[in-house]
Structure formats: structure tokens, C-alpha cells
Length: 312
Image 1 (tube, rainbow, N blue to C red):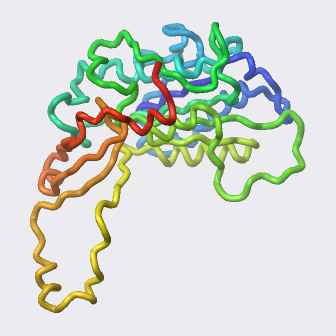
Image 2 (image 1 turned 180 degrees about the vertical axis):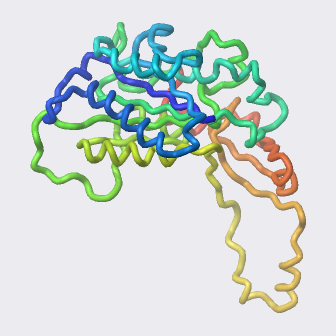
């Protein structure tokens, strides 16, 4: 049962109008409704759970959580108003905390017992923003900062705010106020250069720089296809390439076919608790039974993702 959380920018800058005559906030609301219609075509969508969070301080920013119905979700979506600040970091933390609220009770994180890819609670966060400067009540920020402190019990067991089955995607609205005569970029929708982009990449998602309504619809169709039950895995090549089979003597070719029943695959995935991007090894025998994944680098201290975003 996928969890789909929409994080809507309700800062005052979302009141700016595009050449279409609508505000950014109106476009964001319409994008959510379009996404739900596209998703509703899939029979598997019957088990989807929708959540809604905006940029207000917690708990007021949680408009629809675990207990709210679909009707409440739609009502709260239509009643959103753009009056606040661009507190992306705090709002992302609120979104992750909301998703992780019941994980300790259900034992889904399986602390101290390896990783079980079949035991998941897949979630996708879709953030819709205008990509303006990050602001708080004290200053304007150039980098995205996520607070480390959280009231959730057991949060000290995971260093990163997200889990390995949670992905973040960002739709950054760049639709101009005046109709542009310039042609749209060819090919796919390019990523945006806003501070939220590195956070998206760390979780296995990406950002989209949206310059028109057509591009927005294209992004929504792409996001609907990404709703799958599973985890994001990046395979890493290790060691030199093996010699071509034709270049080996005939005897060696026969020996090459006698492989061990247990093979080791090295792959990278986004996991905690000490690093959100680590290398893991999986035995093929174990993988065929219960997919227990044991980490090799649990004492690793330097996280490559820290070069992209910071945790305050």
C-alpha cells in the first residue's frame, strides 16, 4: 500500500500569477488533482493512502495524515492559502516524521537484524514549490537544512531523517508571468537547480524544472509510473572487467562455468542508520529466501550525501 504525501509550498511567493492567469498555488492544487486522476486509472491505486502537508509549522502544517479521510484531504487541499515563509527544511522534516510515525511500533525498520526488502512501507513525497529563496523567521538561507531533533520515539536509531523505501520528488514551478516566445527544452524535463534537488537525489528521487503546463502534465505522468513497491538500488561495478570468453583456453572455459552456488552481489542503496548511501553484499542463497541484507560499512562516518545537503 503506497503512501503518497504531497508537500505544498504555501509561502507568499506562491501567489504570483503566471501568463495563464492562475497563481502558482492554483497550479499546485490542480497538479495534485490531475495526479490523483492519472493514478486512479490503475487498479492497484485502491490501496493508496494520500497525505497533505504545507509549509506551516508543525503540527498545523499537517492537513491530512494517517487518520484523515480522502474527503478531508480534498477539502484541505482546496482551502490552502499562500501566506507563510519558504521553510522547506522544517516542512520536509515534518513530512518524514509523519511517514515514520508508526514504523517503530510495527517494527518495520528491523533494527539489528539486517534489511528485509520484502518488509516495506513504500512512500513518495511530491513537493510542489516555486523554488524561491529559503526563508525563516530569522534569515534567508542558501542551503537546505533539516533539523536533527524530532519528538518521535526511537528516532536516535536512524541518523538520516528518511528511510530506504521513501523517495522525494520536487516539481519546481518556473512558469513565467509573460508568455515566452522561446521554445521549450527538447527531450525530457530538466532537473532544477534549487536547494531541494540534492535532497531528492539522496533519496533516489529527482527534481523537475517546469516551464509550462505541458511540461507539468508530462512530469505528473512520469511520477505516476514511478509508484512501485520496492526500494531504490544502485549497482556498483567492482574490480576489472573479466577477459572475453573467446580469449580463454578451452580448459579454462569449462572451469569458468563451474561457479559457486553462492554468489555475492555488491550494490549501493539508501539506508541508515550511519550513512544514507552505503555498500551492501547479498548472498544469492539468502536473497532467494528472505532477502536479508547485511551492511558491511556500519562504522562508516563520512556520508557522501553530506556534500549535497546539511543537517542542522
